[in-house]
Image 1 (cartoon, rainbow over the protein chains, first blue to last red):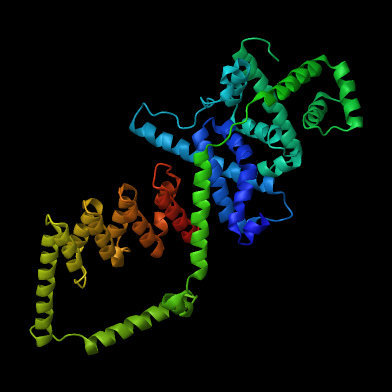
Image 2 (spheres, each protein chain N blue to C red):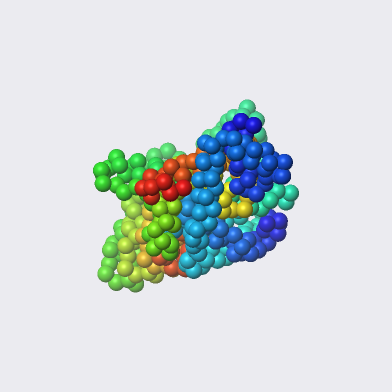
Length: 180
Length: 272
């Protein structure tokens, strides 16, 4: 990223190929929408170019990347909500733009257990999904997640615990049994 | 240890951050507290189960889209770096005072200078030879306008091109002529005529009517050539209002690749 910051913007392609899949899955699990997630990945890399001067070499690249990713996601979410509200003013049959369901093209949907897990995740509040995605799948330490979420480390731990409790409740409800 | 402390240590254990001492402390609590034990076993099983979630790959179209964005951005940066200095306008703004009081004084001075210059150099009273020349000029202007408008309505593309050319002979085209040019740009079946209309509109981009028409027309154009020229013009005139339209074009995967790349180029030049 230092090279990108110093003007070699084409080296961003290396960072893209290294982080695109993980970032894409981060967004897919937050939005449940693969097309939107691809757009968001691109938006993150565009913002990296735009704000490349703000990157500090002493900070970890992934922390910075997820800060941008989170902002990009929040902006898109706000925009979608705003547009849905505008549509609602005009017609009553407007479709929700932000799906709370998993994308239909999940390969593992055949596996019922995994499908329920995905649905349980999708049913969580955005804040809970976000903290779980960052701590469980993105290889970030709690200290780094705290920087991304702009809160204390103990707040991150508390949010993780609460999110896991919510996930468990949701999973049990959907599985219709004392699954975990 | 209380249950809240056990929860904190549990999250450390999930992340693999629990030291020996803390682990012993947590285990001791779990042996005594059945509620915590049951809950933590369930949560840990679920945490493990999350690894079953599949990892998806972005589509090849997304990779192509990224490559297009990066190329366009690089090109825009290169041109920005090669651009000449601030020019006459920059030089003049450098002289413009920063203090509002001095700005006001400068405006008064310029206004006074304008009044004196107008009084000394302007045309004489009505009925003088100066005003007759002005009337004659106006008549010629009207004639050219009528000619241009008539030609723009012709069936032959060659004649419509000539009509566009006639508009450029007008010293200050009125709204009727600009609207006719906008209509030509929007709907003329011939790409060359549309390009000529765009060229003729170039000096008037700052006029709200023209600016709005260009911004509306950009996504609607079916010719990549016209779209690219439109992008060039808007970027050259530093029309920041065009950024949302450019962004929508850049992200539209159904669009011609060269138009998308040009849109990214434009965004990078306008400062995205």
